[in-house]
Image (cartoon, rainbow, N blue to C red; front, side, top):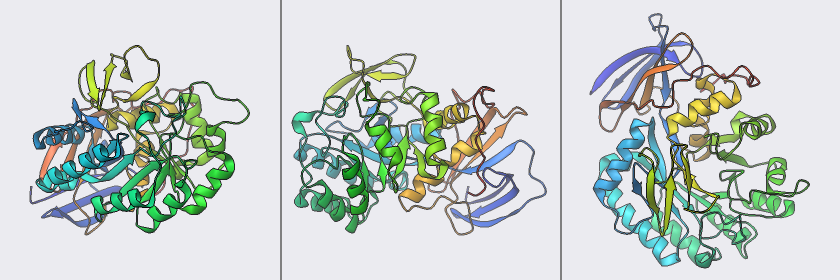
Length: 405
């Protein structure tokens, strides 16, 4: 649709709002006395770590344009208009080769240019220690040399980039400073640095920590471990996978109390099984399996290997764990990651007309949802599987609602 309007309640301000748009841009954003009681408007979700989706593995050689479009359409149906396509640890020439190939595919499609908002490079500059390496292969890890950081910046041109690395690796602190100067956002992860090294990494320019409580051993020292060190370190935003699997509900709530909503961004950390039926899938050189419980593992192993979470499901699961309305949890999957990467997310005059419209029942259950895409000029019906529970459990402690969007 080249132009249109919608009357709905704004997800963050809780005010009745009228939004009008023309030719892909919002032309009016104003108070509306006619907003239906059960209709809400919110910015589309932004996922900063998508390794694959809808049965499509982004870590494979020979990825096709149609496969990438298939995964993107599935992400759209999960409420996610934009995502950071994630390339994970492999031998450096293979990793950079995949990045080049996918960038060329992206350049061929306006849909992909709009959807792939940036790149997340998770590895190969990670910790090889058991547990901390996760499903990443230590044999192909390497140190972040100045030449490799410069090559990443050249390959990604001016695109937003999130680089996850272990700050204890040789040369990592200098690499953080170099990457930051070149406009790359550095996130720490799959690492086991001391508290002092964490502080030095922040001073060098690191701004985030990737999927805290994952990429570490299942058993940790109760007195001194990576969780306590990160929670105590000032200056880091923290990514969390809100699927109730990777982070237990009690720890999830503790993190929010300690850090506050504005310092936490949600991600699916989705791999190929996300949005697909249970079964076996490829994740680069690995084979992974996912059952009805949506837990992704390497066959015969207990550690997780990414998730099968769909972004819109993550919002509802976060709300249930926190005991807050879905509108508050939505903020951490849209506005917070956007701000971290310097991207726009607010609904305002002159901004892209990309947003979600959600209908709810009196108890807060999402009953129907659509997403309007500026780039395609169409409304997409969202797949709201797993989003039936709109009211958080009574046992969960209440969290404050957000007041600005």
